[in-house]
Amino acid sequence: MSAKRAFGKKNADNSKACEPQSSWSHVDRPLCSRCRQRQRVGGKNRNPYCRECHSADMRIWRKTHPLTPEQRRKDSARSYAGVYLRRSKLVREPCGRCGDPNSQMHHPDYDKPLLVQWFCRPCHLQLHREMRCEPALKEAA
Image (cartoon, rainbow, N blue to C red; front, side, top):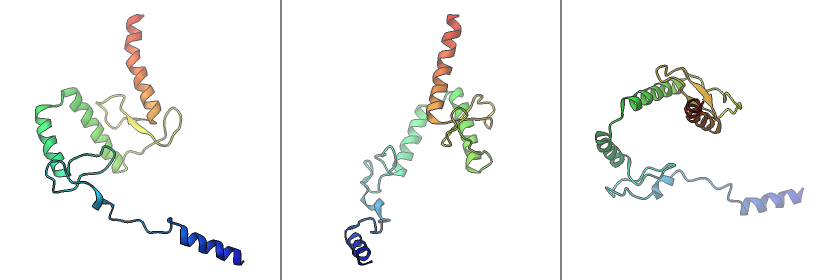
């Protein structure tokens, strides 16, 4: 019994897992590269700008790079389906090929934004590779 108590005491003294995690991790983020006042937005891509500067840049970029009608149609369908997914009116299903629960939406027809198929990332990429190769195979035949 005393061995357990000594073991517990040793772990309590040397363990860093028991220390509380700081909720102030955003304080250490670097400043915006443009305005040097607000902190940068973290995340996967490590944006060098704060949210306000990035938004201003995107407004300028969108004016000089408008979407084509096809891009606008696809973007609209994806946004529409995304809203339904967030509002739980569209339910995420497992991958239609392998059954992986971590799945993505695939739109076979962008004119029907709520008609989606669910694929995991590897199966989704494979599907698009197959779709890209199909027209070449039809032309060769």
